Length: 346
Image 1 (cartoon, rainbow, N blue to C red):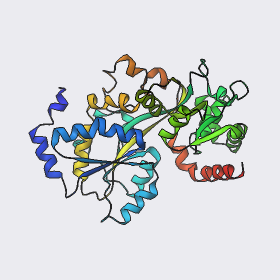
Image 2: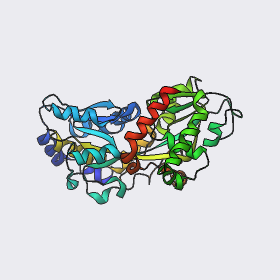
Image 3: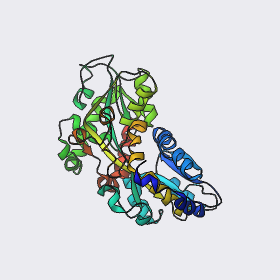
């Protein structure tokens, strides 16, 4: 057993037991795929090592549910929540999250630099990719092909969200990944992205959750779809599917764990993060959910078949576009309003 796991001994067990409150620690994961992986990879092992149960729940994001919970602290049962980068930055600024005690979760040097912030520690690196049904055509499509319904007739799937879709539209229109946010920073660039979406609008099927994306592809509702890579790889693991994944020009982003302000289990939550940040345990996330952990050394022991579905594989990230959370922090409200209006009139 790795040395870091050996530290989960009687002494640590006593510390965790002392930290426990009147109710179980509740961890809230992002989406169904990650929720299943939480149980498979982390909470079952944590309970076995410590004897302390963890309740795992699911949410789909948004700060309003967190704000509402903190307005009624006596009924709030959430402790540790998986948030995206914008939710983390905004929530930390609003005081929705506790400041982390990094000494309690292994130290900042234990994690990749991008995983470290005042209120959050990296939970997973994920990718939104182009997925297609290889039984229907054998070539590997690009985002430009995604738009080419004359050459590849059939419906297309996109997430019902402005975030990510504007980037995909510009990539399909020939904008280099390095220039996407420079383009979106201008009114003409935003108009260009919406004009590109206009071209595809009659052929679109919208999905809202990661499992929806895999479902509409597997059912034949769409020929191709944008999708979380993890949803596609886990769908193929669950039953025989001949799906293809185009990693080139995927959209990458990191989610983080944050402890809700005033959580009675704040100390226990940080001890859970120490346990979950063990590299050999985090490495299991690739198989379980198609996402990568952020602890240093997580990628070192992955077998070739797992490297092939690992979103942190350097051969994939080198062609990728990392979602600019600063851009979306500044522009989400107005661009979401425009996207909703666009949906309403088309």
